[in-house]
Length: 242
Image (tube, rainbow, N blue to C red; front, side, top):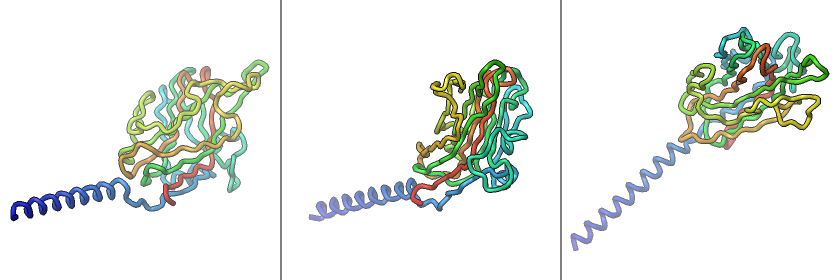
C-alpha cells in the first residue's frame, strides 16, 4: 500500500515538473515584447542618425559615396513620401567604391530594437535611371539586401564580401544585377518606380535586442561597371501583436 502511494506521488511530482518546465520555456520563447513599431520617412539623414540609424560603407576599394539626402545633390528623383522641404528620402550610388569596377557594400542599419518572429518591415524603393550613352536609359543593374543580426545589436558588417553579424537574409532585390532599360521593359530587374516591399521576421529562437539593415550590394560596380543608385523611403517597422 505504501509502495503504491509512493509511486503515485513520484508520478505526480514528475508530471508537475514537466508542466513547469514547459511553461517556463513557453514564457522564454513567447514573452510579451513592448511595441517597437515606428515609421522612418528619411526626410533628412541627419535626423535619422540622431534617431539611431547607422551608415557604414565597407566597399572595396572604398569610395566617397554614402547614404545621403536624396542620393546626391540634386536628388536622384522625387520622394515617395515627403513630410518636409528637403529631398524627402535616403539614397546611395555607385560612388560607394572608388573603382571603375569594384565591390559595393554600403549599409544602412536600423536603430537597436526588440525583434521577434512575426514582426513586419515595409518600405519603398526604386532605382536611378541615367542615359547610357546611346539611345537608351538604364540603371546598369542595382541590388539591395535586407539583412538581420539575429543574435544582438552589434554593428559588425564584415568586409565588402561578407556580412559580419548580419547573417540572416530577409530579402534580396535583383541579386542577378539585371539591368532596367527603356528598350527592354519586360526584364525583371530593380524597380524603376517606387515599389512597396514587405518582409516578415522569421528564424529567431526568442525575442532579442537586434537590428535589421539595408545593404546596397553590387559586384563589379563603379564608374565603369554595374550600378547607378537607389532610393529608400517610408520605412515602417510593425511589431507582431500590436
